[in-house]
Image 1 (cartoon, rainbow, N blue to C red):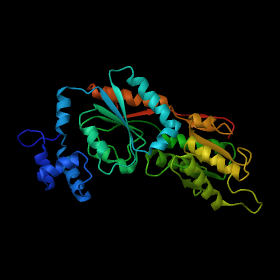
Image 2 (image 1 turned 90 degrees about the vertical axis):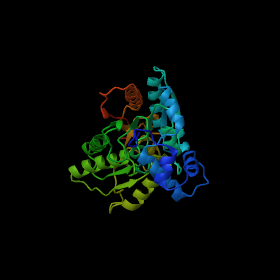
Image 3 (image 1 turned 120 degrees about the vertical axis):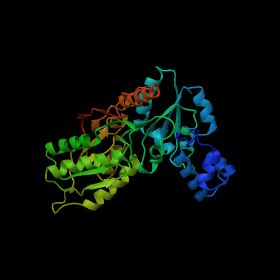
Image 4 (image 1 turned 180 degrees about the vertical axis):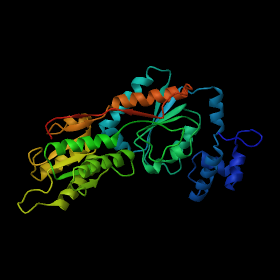
Amino acid sequence: MAKDAAGSLPTLEMVARVAGVSRATVSRVVNGSPKVSPDIVEAVNAAVAELRYVPNRAARSLARRSSNAIALVVPEDVTWFFSDPYFATIVKGITSRVDDSEFVLNLLVASNDPHHKTLRYLNSGVVDGAIVISHHVGDAILADTRPAVPLVFGGRPALESGPDDYFVDVDNRAAAAAGTRYLIERGHRRIGSITGPVDMPAGIDRLDGYLDAVRGAGLGDELFETADFTAAGAALAARRLLDRVGAGPDGALELDALFVASDLMATGVITELRERGLRVPDDIAVVGFDDSPAALAGPVPLTTVAQPSEAAGAAMADVLLRLIAGDDEVPRATILPTELVVRESA
């Protein structure tokens, strides 16, 4: 937290001077009042970030040294959060570690936060640290403003990380390349991909891994469509891809395999394939990513790149608790292993 030349902590009055507004206006913005114009909110938030102002209630909490609470921040749609089994395994891993400590876990699920309520909450002193999972480029404010608590990201941060950013992840690019190369080694040559959103590091890295593999084998690199890590979104992306590639002169589909960037998306893709009368794996092979419960939930057990989601959740919590305890030897990046699990889909 920044201090002025005299060494005092920033105050509402200081924020008001920098933002060029009244103290009362700053108070309204800090407390989330909707009755402030967007340009004023932006100016106040910029001043808060510049001065690294923390509300007085945080100072009271810091005086008590600890709130014994940490936050799990998920900048996603609530429906998706409760429907994707990936999140369940991550939370299970986090709670397994938190349960062994004196801390409790607060869950914050919010995909739309125009007034930066989440950031103010993290800065308010009611939690001692936070884990952020499933973040997008647009969520970079969580890192850029450096809240007054330690942050641990589940996955590589969406923008270039700073010296105080810590994350737990797998090597998504290498893992996606391995999943795609498995298809190549099985003799497939017209390999497409349904990838995740390209405003998320996991989506970008898994697309890059797929491209590394097909380009390395001298295969075409244009057979991909982006989706949103949901089954419905992946089904739509598969429809676009299938309509685009069509059939060759012999009537055969100009696609013989798909690398799909999550198991949940793969269930939507397989549904679309079956609706077109295509058999998995006889007509088209499918490889997923995660080895989540979704891999076994569909009509065909899914060959997939397994990532240790539960262990990742536990590692995120462990890194955060070590940071809160003042451990200065915590690695900034914790990279966990992946492996290919072969089943019937490919």
